[in-house]
Length: 409
Image (cartoon, rainbow, N blue to C red; front, side, top):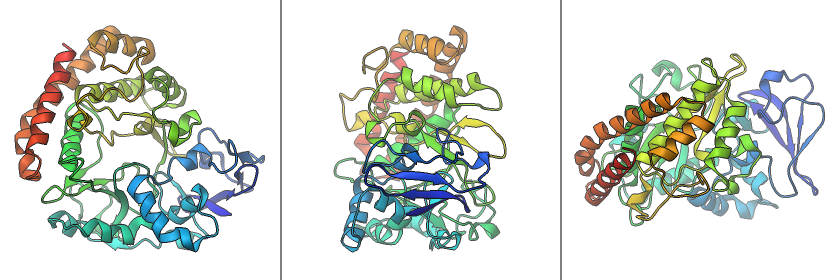
């Protein structure tokens, strides 16, 4: 059995059972501390879809790829059962969003600190990320195939553009503060620099983007957690799979029309649902322009907090020009029944029919995204300065972005 917390408040228990894993709320939990928008506070238990799987809101945080393999090597032999629930219990004190798992609130706070400024200044060695894996894998409840970890800054980044948490308080934060990303340079040359510039393009296109920096030599990308609050606690987060009651393995299934409908039923922003859907449309257009073929369900989500009652689109994250590595790449989900990159006409129709936009508003967003990407494209000439091995990556990104912009004229 795993105790479930919303930040540091105990709210229920997640239990392994032969028929299906079960979550039960504790008595007296306020409605605003529900673990999921799909699981309001209720005395009746919530059962997972079937045995051996987790509820979608828990499943979305199960590590994947290199991180899962590292955790398997570290813990599988020591535990009688090493399924997704066991894996979640290992990493549960530090998940994206406000949910945490652990035996007690005190256990949740035992995350070691790391000097991230030194990490940014390092030029990297083959063993650097392996060492970080050994230290932080058990605190990294974060999905994604590429190697990534959740790490707690020791205050080294201060009050720079990185953090809303003052330097004197950051060391007292109860959990992890940043995502540190690595990559296989043989398979994906320049991937950190690729994402760095894609996030710059997203910001230039008018999207909310978490603070991000790239290490000297381009071997690591460090991104501040977008769900981190100024007091060191976290906003709730649910991705596009969890919001639709889907497991992470279904992230490439379905359509953007379905995803828009899922978000429309969840978003309750301060400016209204239509304004939030306009942000989703802007984010989707950005992925089309920069040729990000990995904009699947899990790369869109919502953030919310019990104190406000609003549900807003999460800031942009995990954006990469995938066509650099997969020249024939396409959309992650279907649009109008196909995964071909859309032209302006198809995008306009999607904006009108699914995102509550007028034709004029949709055209304005497309123009603003294209202009923002074009501005950042001029900076791609310095990409090899960030990663000397990535000159071809810079050229391919420039060509991909140019193609994306031209396709929407």
